[in-house]
Length: 105
Image (tube, rainbow, N blue to C red; front, side, top):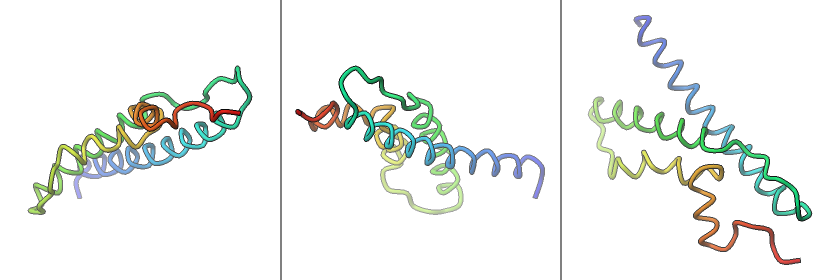
């Protein structure tokens, strides 16, 4: 294994790990925000976990295609982390479903 490959593998795995932990932090912050009294600020990580997850998915799909695997709808897998992270585009999906703000008291 060359140094460049090892560096790429390390950055690749760190990107996925940051996405998973950041999405978990944003989900936990969203749950606490829904239960908090009025006037409380949202305490998640905005944009960054979803964007890093999307970049990691881009390189994952590229590596899978290069390895001879068939990946259906590669654009979907690249955009999916943006919508799964509640600090990124996921908050707009929740708003469309009526789950974005606090529940009526």
